[in-house]
Length: 199
Image (cartoon, rainbow, N blue to C red):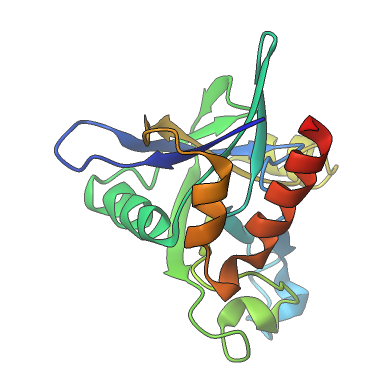
């Protein structure tokens, strides 16, 4: 099975267009809904209505199927960094969709960072165990319908980005394996599993 690295070309109009709230995020990480119980807030704040979770995880193989064609895609740490920066510098923090199908109002990315420390990162405080270089975000939900009918009921569980990326020239799996660092063990393991499956 092919493994394709997706990249950003900063000279072209490509990148992340929106953050979608979905039931089954491809990165397999659910967000957490921060409520007033998380902090001692003034009594006027019944709920904070903030969703926090991984937006993009570097080197995580994501299965794709296009008709009969099956393959994996992944994003390098550098691409995750560029994508997170471009999303904000292009002013797209209010672009949101539901299940990649419906544009929705009232969701805004209000906090964004990359995991740089496995011990002291804010994501650790909330029980997330994310790889270094993961793009994490907090999204404020000011849309009553989305909050009540989708978030509170568990119909949406995580984030999924949508946008335009370029395929890096396909390389043989062995070359990718040779380039992996120790931090990329997860990718190496999936490559080994794919090789066994292909044989």
